Structure formats: C-alpha cells, structure tokens
Image (cartoon, rainbow, N blue to C red; front, side, top):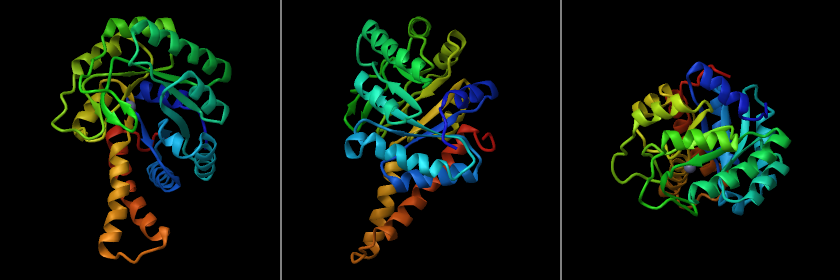
Length: 282
Ligand SMILES: [Zn+2]
C-alpha cells in the first residue's frame, strides 16, 4: 500500500515506536527494504536524496517504489530526504512523492523558517507532510556536507520553529552524524527528552548508520518517531557485489550479484526494524 507518512508517524508517536526510513539508490534496494518490512509487518519509509535524484528522476523512483508497494499490505511512504531547494520539494510532490523533507539547517534560523514555511504551505495544499531540520547534523553523505561541527538543537528554538512553520515532523541534532563514524558518537538523550517535552510534532533521527542499536532504542523510547538509515545500506549493497566478484571475476549477469547484494541489504533492514520496535505495527 502506497501512502503518505503523516499517519504512520503520528501512530508511532502515540504508541512509542519509530518508523524506519531507508535510503535506496536502485530497484534492488527498494525491493529488499519492502520485502523485509512486509515480512516483519512494519510500516516503512523509502527515501532518496537529491544526489540520488540526479542518478535517476523522481518519476523513476516513484514508479518503482509505488509498484512494489502496491504488491504488499504494509504502508509504504516515499520521502524526499534532505530536499535542497523549494523547487526540488515541489517537483517531487508533483511526481508523486508522498512525504518531503526541506533542509534549511545550514541557513540562519530566520532563513530556515522562511524556506520551511514556503514548503509547508505547498505541502498543506497537496496534503503532503513536510519534515524540516533544526540544528545541524554534521558529517558527509552524497553532496550533503554538514561539516565537522554538529550544532545540537536548542529546545526553545525548536518550539519557536515549529510554531512559526507549522511543520509536520522535525529532524533534530543530538550528536549523530551522516556517513561513516570515525569514533563513537556521543548522543545527547537528555536533550532529546527536553525537546520531546517542548514540541509535539514527531521527531526524526538522522545519521543513524553506525549508531549502536541499544542507543537507537533509547532514542526511540525517548521520542524519536522516524529513524533514517542510508550509509549502512549502501555499504551492505556494495559489499554484496564485491563478494561476488572476489569469488568469480567472470560473472556478467547483474541478477547474480543483485541477489547477493539484496540479501546483504535485507539483513541490515531486518536488524534496524527491530531497533525501531516497529515490527507488527503495520
Ligand atoms: Zn540526514
């Protein structure tokens, strides 16, 4: 079932679990994610970054994900991750994305409010929920470069931001980082709890690949309602392909390494759904 993410996150918020959101790059990754979410009866969000949308068009990903989603009973939403401009946000909505993030976190507070509000107005008119980010989740992923310094979200700023933008979901910075971690991330659960007390919209955790499962579970219990995974799936998919060619250089059928790569992704998805407590919540 192909649907928007709003009710999925509101249900998660009410019942104390998170909806896992997995970044995909191709049909195989989308198939692997939806297959496991369906087996585990978990609601799921598939998402693509602007860099992924330079690889293939929004319509291409929308058609693939919608087709796979319509073959299963669990709710599947398709989300623009780190939308980089008003224009891209509108384009993905036009092409049938069911959920959109606009990321103005690298701008000033006022500029972030202005940009987010513009996209929220379009979202409201089209009944598409909008996610924004306040504070800065650092690290590097695709052409998104958050730099080295994270700026953790201030609870009172978060309250003002949500009031002024009327945004549906808020991504907050509490110490996670995009890409591969160099050391152990220092996650500020206390700050998360404060923000959860201050604002009532569902909260989103970015940069979760490589964060210890137990910490993710603590974040979910403390109020994270959407948990994003990108790097871990890319690594898993690529490792599957590498393994096949390490064994046999002569393979030329993409289905052969595609199957192995999908299995690797499936294992990552299975593990992370369990951290989100979303099994049997579809
Ligand atoms: Zn992110």
